[in-house]
Image (cartoon, rainbow, N blue to C red):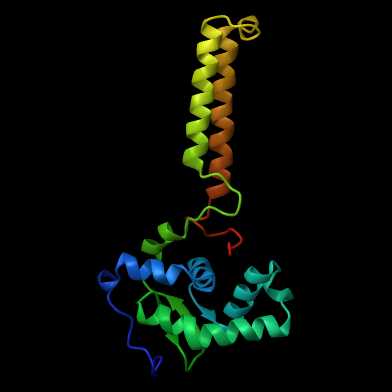
Length: 187
């Protein structure tokens, strides 16, 4: 069985530079392909095209229109999969119409952790929460009205509770995702 005739066999992972990886990940379709491949080991191109079209149009993969699927299919087959294949990120078997990840899938997941739309990055959120907590402790320590009316242990409990709730929300948003996996792909 012959692999993609136009592209060489996937390169060794150590030959992929960060610059090339960022160029590849600059395209939303390629990011979606890599996310999908991190969920499942092998895809038929048609099913992968439905997933990409669904992500682009905000619909479920099975609900995409025929022309949306065809557009994604053509772009994947002619441009994106050969590029991912030659970079060593996927094995694209044109004859069988299948795509599968290489061993690099775990290494590139870190690059797929993007902040979606209007989301605030978690590190900024925790920093802000820490600053607010510190201010609360200071004003409570100096009995600034109305903060002095609430007992210090109550403020401590409130701060700990806010961090616990934040951490559980953070965990829930990332749990089982393996960085980017399990969430609807961003554009």
